[in-house]
Image 1 (cartoon, rainbow, N blue to C red):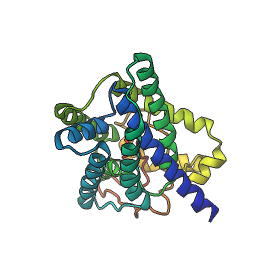
Image 2 (cartoon, rainbow, N blue to C red):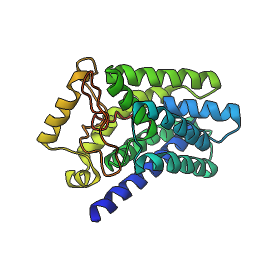
Image 3 (tube, rainbow, N blue to C red):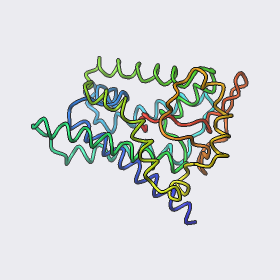
Image 4 (cartoon, helix red, strand yellow):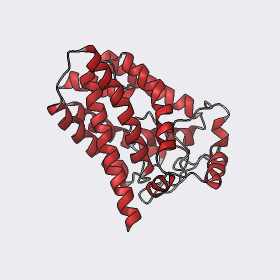
Length: 262
């Protein structure tokens, strides 16, 4: 019971923190991560709030899970709802700074908060976010590398978001190059006993197992993977879906962060 409570708490805090980090990045006005550039651009063109746009996109991405044979967990559904509500609530109360040093500080702080939140919500192991599941599902079904699939998806939404009017800037670059190392740093600083409760696996056996699972894709994937290796999908995760062609397990392969969590 305590383990379930701990994982549920980690999920809730992680998703709230993620939504707050999104709002802070928006208010800083120095550039967003690729998915949020798309959300902001879509919101500007349709009159939706960024939170609602994020939720609409999340639901649309979930529909793309159907041919991939992915199944959402409780964390997947919570991801869509909680982040959308949090980002809109935060934007309603956060002021827009006029000082450049303040904007820079907000942008950097948001990226750090995003990394901490990522460790919590993915560590809960209660199901990947819609966008994470899309990526791992495509990797499993196509046999393509994680790097190629992730880069293709994020480049596409970034360009579309920018054309729609989303904010691309230095914050976009800071997020792209900083989120991975920051997540790894957070994982090293947080006591392993807490991470074990929340779903992150650190044992040598776990490392060996995920290496075996991911080996077919890692030959062409980058040497640096975001975050640490996740073996346990959690109580809310779907049964593993594998690719007959390359044998990659979409639920047990690392959920590559940068993900926006979404």
